[in-house]
Image 1 (cartoon, rainbow, N blue to C red):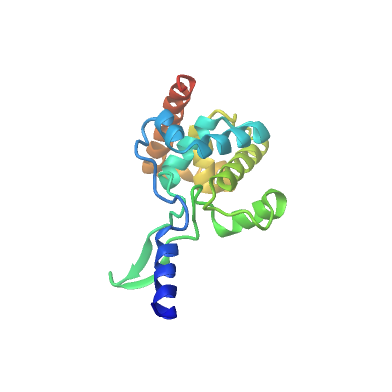
Image 2: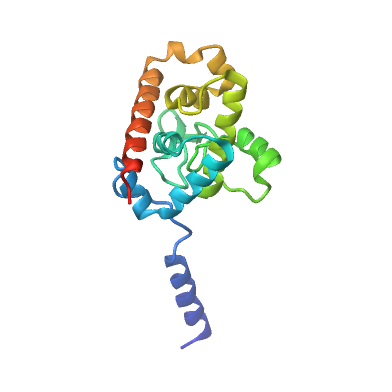
Length: 192
């Protein structure tokens, strides 16, 4: 076998190993199934809960809404005239869909330069950090997934200015996040 052929086979083999678990767990409606399939998720959320006080179910419901547990999730592209790509709708990326500026602020204050939005441990810690700051500045209880989601989506200033009030679709989404958080909390109590 030639050296080039062997190198090509090795390269194909390494590429087929993938770059991480970026696909979603199979059953997103069952918290026990999620953590059974991906135990590292529960470890990450529990570590963030211990550090920041944000309940696991609140973070899980927010990750569900933001990325459906897809580690490399991105916002869709924008198009001009329906065909010319003009970049993404925002810089949101990863499990938490953190924006570049907010992620940089987190890395400077807490996460370190090596933190990545497509690692569940870093994403969970980011959410805990953001929600703990939101509790301090806006007084939203850490268990209130609905209002935390509104503040997460609109930013703290947007939440304080009630920018969500003119977005009935967002209020419905936040309500769904709150209900999912309650469902996840009940399910997690019964997990093995």
